[in-house]
Image (cartoon, rainbow, N blue to C red; front, side, top):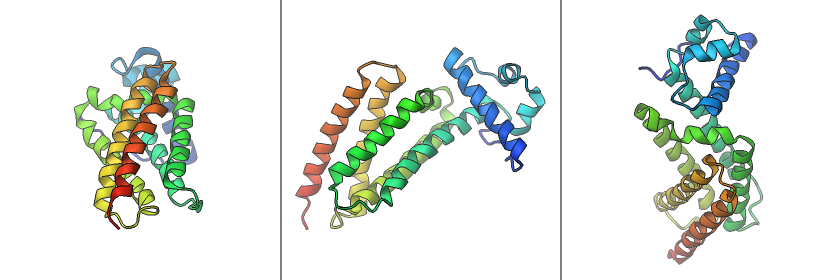
Length: 206
């Protein structure tokens, strides 16, 4: 089963149809769950010819993959924006908390996307995408750390970034289950993890 789309839309109307298919798919996932999603259900829910759905997507796996990439792409953009932020007079902890708050706000606004964090459970073939996203995210976060800790090798900063990434992924459990206490738990886990990381980074020899 391919996870690649068949055709990349270039015209305005085609892009609108493409995005509408993804939007309907996400609505159906919210309503009925990921396992029950089918291309035919998407076509029926959107009053779209099933052939039009297949024009872009060979199967539901390709649709889920596109949704996942859309989700992770917006998360990486948040980190990239903070990376080029010239507000370097703040220490790393302040900048990272600002980054966490922006990420948290984004999850709050687009809560349904949190379920896509587990798409690899349904389709193990998509695990490479998840790992690639984590690698890119961690690399960008490492560059952000490097602005404050230039004496630490990038490879070591990548290890620290990976740890913070795992903290964030664990916190997503609260988000995806709509636990009312998820925000406090998210911030507590992030604070504990960040404090441990900063203690280690500041202990690194110059």
